Image (cartoon, rainbow, N blue to C red; front, side):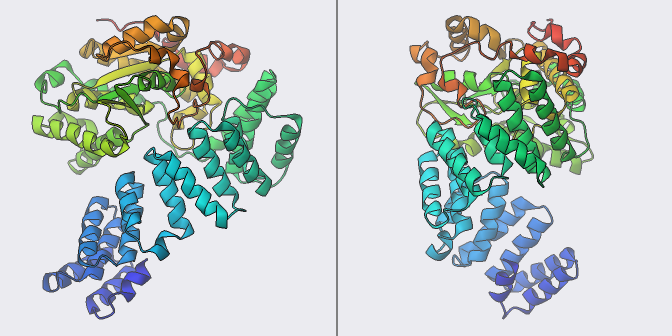
Length: 537
């Protein structure tokens, strides 16, 4: 990209000099050269685009977007600038904007393999799964031997509930590349498919070969599921533990228990802070946040809500986490952090955060239903900000027995993030801090959060669903009890499970592994007993 931008403005000595400064490692000098040049030649699109490129290198992504858009306004055919813009928008999870930029590329660019696959991924993030699958089909016509492409197709098919077709796609990927551990894990992660003896033999053979850590850990998680389905808890746990140990090697240092976060949140989110900002946030009632730990039953709650004719199920949206991260950057610039920054915001800034959240999530809403579900589990860490910025939003705390939830996390390999989930000790401590945080919020904002306990929902679904809908201000609708008939796309690991009627299959499953779960019990501490009690008033 840099070379093409350089070639596009050979007549500009400033661009040549700036490129030289970049090669010499002086981004600041290059930026100064171009800034001075643009005072004299403000419409030099390649120079403006180069400024955008420098901004990306310096971590100033918002400024980069401004510069690249400006360059493209002047020179719409400057495609290397558009590719840079697409890249930065994609990394910022601004999928709708990135997709619009892709559509502006020339046919030659638009039809290239990397652009088509990126387009498919963006369509998937936006919930446009039919177009996503069709795009993958187009690419596969000319790339039928690409194992990773078949695996991506499998993910898309799984999301829309085409399980048999997803299995075929994963099997095709495995046939093309038997060492691709992620395809084996993807089969296991369907939750509804069982491996046969030949599959187990093939996976064990692969583990004896030369594999990357990434492939090896996926094989271990898949074998853990294979032996779990055969009620061989000892061998199953052995593979789960091995997979988690390999995953831990890829994680950097740092607190994986959320203790520091919760300490800061409790110190900041006082009754006085909420009182000072009462009524000042964005009044939109649209969002229904479903929060909690992963594997807590949050997908089931989402599916129930999304079966209501007034509610749209979207996805696990990152918008609120991104907004809180932006407060972190602003706080650090002032010598503090996100919580010091939050405590100093005035009412207009609080309202702006809520309005920005509504704007950023709008591209993910594909219907005209007045309410939508944001089911990002980690939003439990953002509940304080949600209450301030969106006081009329509903917040549902999806909670599950800590041993069941903890073990379910341990045996689940997540594609990204969830760094607490690869150690029984960190899982237990993370769960305990989550309970501590939610207890605090229930004390300082009584009645604002509705808790759904997974086990109670399973035992008495109608009563629990009625209470859930009443909290959300929604009339009861029988479709919410027939959630498994909802054909909406589901991206989470529970996709297969929520397409079945409610059942108790996983309620006490952890007890089969209880002899191995001592570190989890120890780390949970008091949370093992008080996890489902109401916080003291």
